[in-house]
Image 1 (cartoon, rainbow, N blue to C red):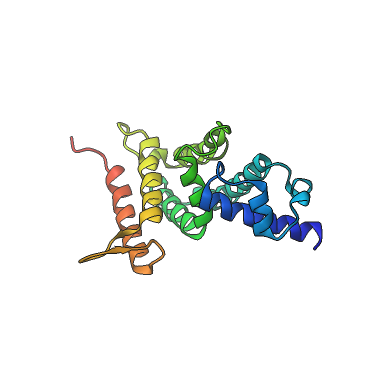
Image 2 (image 1 turned 45 degrees about the vertical axis):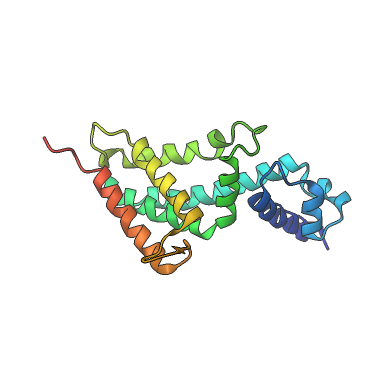
Length: 198
């Protein structure tokens, strides 16, 4: 196996293990075994566990940035852009469940020896989107607090799904549940950006 193929396998295995176990519970031997690569080659291919984890986060950031940038660059109004950002955000996270899981571990006090991940990989996205939607938000509302509930709701939906009608739970990958959640989120964004009555 050449270095490029081996590196790709290590990257994929690392992403899966960080998503399943978290950074703190994953070690390079586990990653090597999952990738089918000799443990002795891991550091030559990707560096340390920390370097691999940061590389995974960096690549995810670049993918998400490109996705949101397209929505931000819409020629529509700020309100239209808000809805396009919402759809892009939902679509990105539904289609990248492993990255979602890596971040969920992070928010449960994982990888605390990497203290600046949010500032490096999430704050720039939030700033970019906040600047774009500012004109859609009433003057008495902070645009940051329009986007924050969006993030929280999307993460909660992907992690837990929704209650099914009658009994049980429906996973976020269910098309009907996803369509329902999306319509509810669009309604929420409209309510959050409606000026207060005088």
